[in-house]
Length: 182
Image (cartoon, rainbow, N blue to C red; front, top):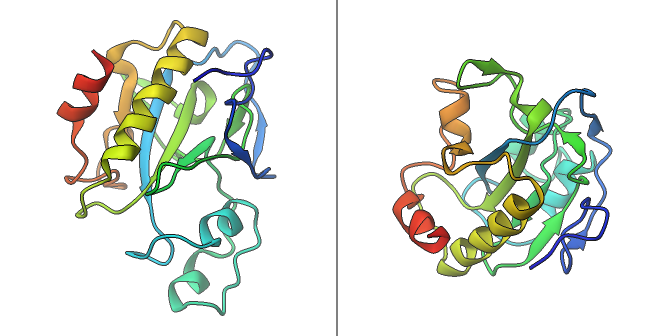
């Protein structure tokens, strides 16, 4: 797995461009990967809802939960679906809006210096083996391009926004990911 020559895109990922991004601060290099979990509607997988959400096209009438979130302007750099499909919404050089109010090692505003990777799933449901394999490959490719990302700089959303976020949840097997990255 490789990034494009300019480092902005993951080769082979389906691209769905999100407007919910902006320039990173000039002095910020990428030094953090944040792993998230998402399913739309909650607990359901597949379909176009995540793409719609990250492109501000979510139909608020399609599901009761969507009425609560349809007005949010959020994004992530990548999504790894249950079947392992990779979808990229934001170029890596730009700031995706995935972390919200956050802090990592006493450094706030994690969106400024992180790459957000969503896994299609939810906190209490085990993620698929293919998702772990894809995630490990993606992380290896990103670390080759962004050498400031150490093993300690691969965290969950809950780690950088404790009390506010819980994903990727207790079902996420960090030991399995570490083994795949070793």
